[in-house]
Image 1 (cartoon, rainbow, N blue to C red):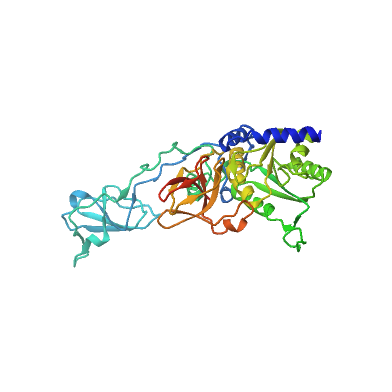
Image 2 (cartoon, rainbow, N blue to C red):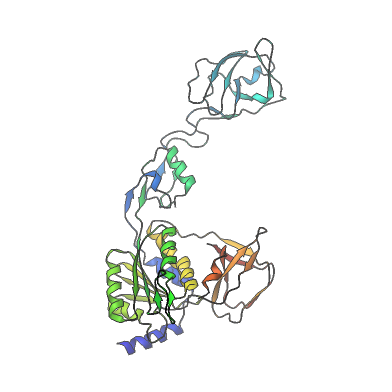
Length: 406
């Protein structure tokens, strides 16, 4: 079995698929989570599972857009008698008639009869307490009823990823317990005898586990609920047991390490022993080539490279879109393209590369010193990762490339 698996891996490694093809396969295997209602204060980062209609006109009445005096436009050349003062939240008592006005505050309801509000700074008070307009002309300065939204209008569509301004809209239409999709659960496993936890002192041949904590945080940012299962040693039986445990309650399982072609890289074989279907094993991308994707009982399993920059990039490009899709969202990364501020060259161009970059105030990209997929420090100052297409060995100042902000 293991010999067959070795040749199977070797054959799959020859035929790399593009990152676009890998994403298509991943999203084809998504399982949409069910809906649930949540309190508005806990809805940030969730995706709507319903279409939201307004239960009211917005504004719900003609309201003043500023502090001033509500009056009739045809009376602007007259001295106007003040009949009342209208504060926000108060119902006007007196309609405005010929030669009259009402002092009014921003957001207050405009009284009947008035068709404009004149600014305080464009008025003066006469000795007998009347108001005189000192401007040349005025806008209405009124936010008219239903000019923004009419009762019954759709304000947000199903699948909307809720951000702070969306919560303001939900609040304004009384949707205080929106229906959203449940969050996927993500199980995280690190593998390798050389890995120890951050609180342990590494031995002469060991390194601290950074991947688990990076992926855990990325999962939270993407809207998922992560669970960390610890470090699996480079033993098939131990890896199989921890993978089985993680697959019980989680929708997505992320393993890091053990997916290349070494003697101890047996994670793909462990996946097959569990009965999982492996969909791809190598991607034409740098870093991140040895990435495995499998499915088992409607669960998605990723074998991510052990180097931290690789696992970060593959999460960004494949796992995050899957999480959003399972939450009912639509994967539509912003089409950001920015120019390089310096020349960039690389030795190999057989795969697409995603490299860490900073972005200047002028909107120019500057690649960060980057020694390869294990160079985690290169990400410390990164604002984004930039995609260098396959076949391109050199780019000049001003050349545009795709950017994913991080």
